[in-house]
Image 1 (cartoon, rainbow, N blue to C red):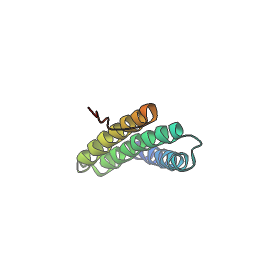
Image 2 (cartoon, rainbow, N blue to C red):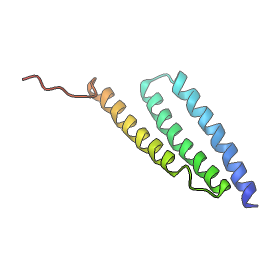
Image 3 (cartoon, rainbow, N blue to C red):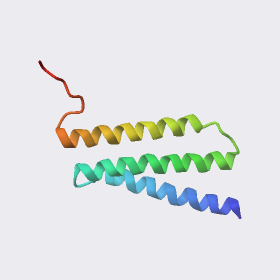
Length: 93
């Protein structure tokens, strides 16, 4: 029964990853694309974690942590770019 639930979860997360990818590619606004990329990263982490549970392994823990960190930094950088127009502020004295 647990295997069936994990298989259904994999299918649902795979569909969600595909939909987030489509929204990131054809999103009407930049904000939609940023949210879609952030959701893509979170869904990908969930997908990898379910695969780890099915394989009874901890081989991909580092991968999920790196994806999470990169998704967070990317979202913060893109939000800062939308707000100010630059990512790195350079003070010219």
